[in-house]
Image: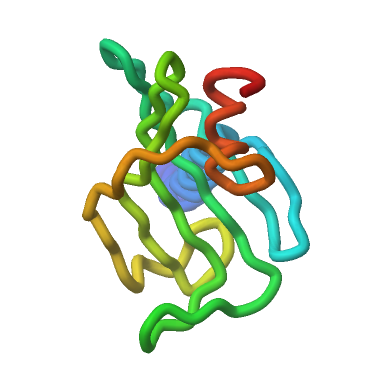
Length: 136
């Protein structure tokens, strides 16, 4: 009797812990903005401060399928490096996913660091800069 109870309990507890862990990973995402194209999330737990810069992960979910080369995707996750004192930022990584919320496995990845730019009002980069540094 005792062993049957524990055999039934083990799969249920594994499911519980799996849901708890995946929920915790998603709980770090906060909506940064909603646009006509979709939703933009900031991962507050990903923020890393360095000497003069910070890095942050941004997830963007699209309402309609996007195309990059031969890949169709509904979500992207980017890593940005932000310099608040010099008011500039750059994308250092981007990944695209077939499903929303960066799910379904990476379809394509680009790890080429982009050039530094100033955040243009009304663009994604401006939202990222404001989230980490305040109003421009």
